[in-house]
Length: 524
Image (cartoon, rainbow, N blue to C red; front, side, top):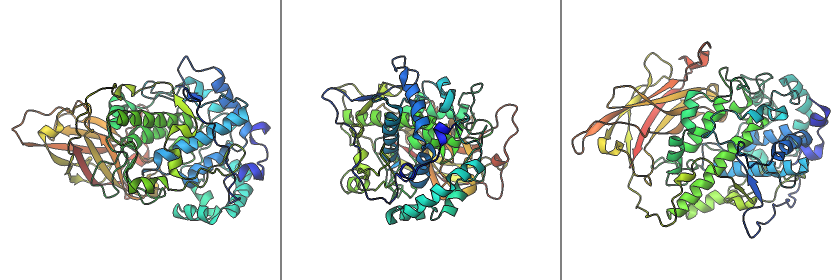
């Protein structure tokens, strides 16, 4: 690595989110009268100023604490609960402000990657330090540990009690726990070069299953989700932002947005071999992380504007809003390395906190025009499947059959919530990075249709974990008598190896293979 990029890490820069007395953060500028101050462009948008990627590269080189920024994701990132979107909005926003400072570009705003429009790694993201296989990055775990062992020890010694409590809930009570978690892959999260990103300039395309999870139909289904977050008990849909949990360190049910484009793009970045920082919680080491999450944040804005146009709530309501808003995010730092003053989840409910907007991208067509008649939300129903085979990768495909009224599987109105299958898997630590396809077939036969995918992304996952898969829009059901039900077959199968690539032992059934514990079909 060049001396510029990974010289000695100073205590001030490295301990920015430690237990130092909370200082006033450098809060973003107030929005001017007309529009936002900063615009985040889609990376292929011809209107994006050429300086944007140059500033991004310069900022990465000048930060010197790029890896420490990735540690925040290991320490504190929520997945599988309703703080998923708000935490990442904060994480992206503070990184963006830091790049602005270190690049010297006062107008810098991160680009985003619209994978629905372009389901391949943008060519620009293989250039220079935008590719984690570049020589500027630390190539091996041994070199990484040698450089960061002392700073990590100092960091843990300086954590506040509140931060220590968060880390304990995540199994990171000590530096030994941390180094065990971030050890060299496959046991841990550190991917040595040249496996820091699996997709390469010669093979940048997302795989077939991931393309389905980012396709326009899947994004439509996500945006048509009518609630911000579902209940922790599972009595309703998981929600656009994923379901409620007691704290952002707990897991609940993943909604379509998190289950499909989020998880599967992370998984796809490993390529055929499954090697990439993006498949682990050290994923922010790869600069493409911030473009991926920028698009998810943009879709949150699209969903918010759609809900507003339809007269529906855009955030939790009543006591739920209070609980959601007051959740504490304790590890962010500002561009000067000081802890930020904005530590409540509610501080990041709107994009105005960082004074930015987005150039238009996929999904904008789901925002109704002013004056569009708004239909009442139809009641939703849930149908439990009988599990006929539980072990994924065994001789009989894992899954089950739900008896669903034929009328409930008919094409839904544009404003109706999506029809989904919620698939609950029993998972263990060894399942991190495993990837599966979800296939459905009505009436228990015929050619199965690929509904989506499941990627086990979070290293905190254990026990029953629920993923939401939208039912295909082209699900054809034969005419049936009024009130009649049809069997809907839902299967979870390992993602096949690419042509010419030997299948990984991780896709075969073993004593520790994931088990399908439950399948629930939800319809209007």
